[in-house]
Amino acid sequence: MAARRDTTVTLRDEQRDDSSSSLRARITTEGELELVGQDLGPMTSMVSDDGEYEYYWNVPVENLPALREVLGAPADVDLLDFLVEHFSGPASQTLESLVSGSGLGTLTVI
Image (tube, rainbow, N blue to C red; front, side, top):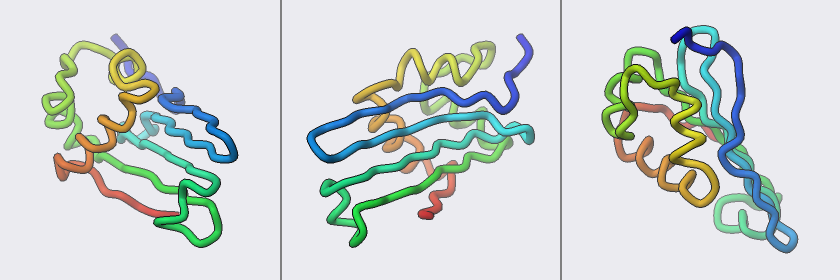
């Protein structure tokens, strides 16, 4: 199966009261996995003074086989399809924890 290029999927898009939280995933043209998150509203008060917290995780292409292993994603399955199926909605927080705990990606706060 050919890998998708520059396709973005939504893993989380939640609205609660006056706060929102989103997480999107994409495979870049270089083959890296990017997880892009944005949280808005009072729920960001622990990490942001302005009510906005934007960040992204970047997992280099050479780390994707190890990440697939951590996530339980078979090598022959489209990674974005797997993420949508197994790590959407509340499970997206588990994905972020797994990526963080694996040490396979780099977190950048915007």
